[in-house]
Length: 456
Image (tube, rainbow, N blue to C red):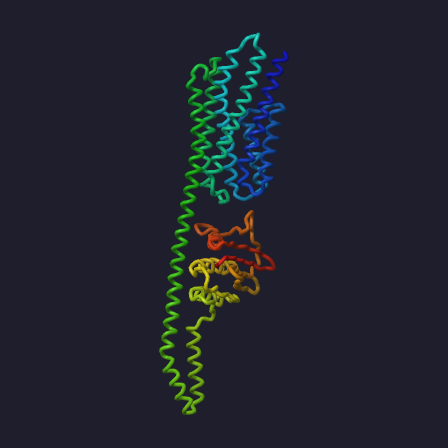
């Protein structure tokens, strides 16, 4: 083997290895936003590159499709070990990258073929072997650059379009999202199959014989990548519409709750006004009984009057009639379930805090407490304090279980359906409207929700 032939062979191998390493690096970049820790994405790249290099370097060699499939499966297992949540999303990521890898490399190969034929093959002669080799090196570099450009653009667009990266993916969603990738890679396989069959049967290259075949192939690869991107955009738009629908349903529920609270407040005030209206008669009756020394009757009448007053006078007085009604309703529910309910909450006066916004916090927070309170001595407590412009609310409940926080500062919920995980997110949304935030802690069989807001 001559020196120039050895250089050709070494250059060919180096270009293949470089492409393997580059695609492996971009595999890690692709999955990084979806994995809990950055080191997980690094592990994906390392495992994928290692598997592919081993399969390329050691005999017996297997076909390219099977080799890359093994590499992607190994990378998927790494993702699963690093983060066992959202497995269907990881399947989607693996299949999508598998397809993108084939499609982008094939697009670069079609363009590289044109350049190779124009530069290298036109200078085929014994006197120009080193010139030919130099041109070949240039085409290998061009092929790698094109691969980097295509795969970087494809991955960048997909990751940018995929907004709800932390959302749990269902089986149906996964199937919908991987169909374009499967169609793309299947089409690639069919095109390559006919290319191989034609060359085996005729001894000629199909693209050389029919130039449009290469153009159609490139067009198929490009459309397949665009289809993957478009379906993801449509999926994310659908998710956004779901979020808006949930938000609208939440607002309607809040309006309904507010109407109920207002009706309760109005009823309470009517009862108080009625009692005040009758107070003169009550006082006259008591004066008459006392004047005639009917002390037993006066005491009985006063006790009856006190009971009537207790019925219309709130047990909890916060400074806001709306919040009074909410807390009284939760107190009633707690008594029915034999839960201790403690309140030291005071509505901050003369601030920009809206009672409607605060009712969202109270309803969601106390509903969560009611659903999750547990223990031998179940209790719920709520307190507040204000210091200058900062208003803090602390809500505690007994809890004997263990919260699963995952990779978030808020725990994962066991609920399902449209209201999945909405409570704490709604509380946080309102708190951030007031330049604040929330935190949730667990310790000593107790869950503590702290809500901070700036009310001035």
